[in-house]
Image (cartoon, rainbow, N blue to C red; front, side, top):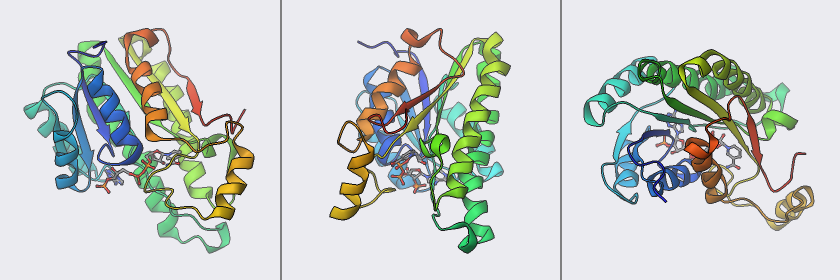
Length: 245
Ligand code: NDP
């Protein structure tokens, strides 16, 4: 099924992990994909390896307003107007509150929350003109439940949910849908290798008894980006094997 044929998707942090999985699923659905990451070489090779043709990779730090403005111009020139935007780029700087440095707080907020704002502002303009679009924000179950040692990260991910719902209300009349996915524990570079004790402790909290994969998230992203989700906006989907319910 090529339900996304004719669509142009942009995935921030699409060069690795969950973002790469989402880029792959959207490409399988028939979309052309713009893959964005700070490392341009990695973004370009990820784009080149996606199924189908017409994908491109771009270097951009989403926390930097000038780079985001330049990205919007470069994508428009090379590929055209973006119709599906996935705000996936994210970082962690985990530590307990009393040990948290200003930089730990600022860096996580700058990439996870300000980055989503900057990129959305840059690309929603075209969607509004065309009166069509889909925006997906990758939050986290930690944004719903909280997590000791992640006050900065959880605040940024909870912030994304308020951003998602407000945007959904603001853009619905222009036929732009905006939803969030809240992944549970997914095996990527971000989560790294767990020792046996950590894995056992995690399993106790996951009713489905396994960690998630980028593909578990990607399937939901493809559904939300496509016509089967045409009446869904302002929602958050936890994809976590039942961790938070
Ligand atoms: P990874 O660390 O594996 O990948 C992060 C991606 O984001 C890379 O492509 C990286 O590319 C890019 N990136 C990081 N910082 C920036 C930046 N400032 N500007 C542009 N791109 C950037 O992360 P995951 O795949 O694990 O996570 C993806 C998203 O899912 C994040 O938002 C994360 O918070 C969220 N999430 C992850 C969970 C998990 O268990 N893994 C659980 C819940 C949510 P480059 O280094 O080249 O910039």
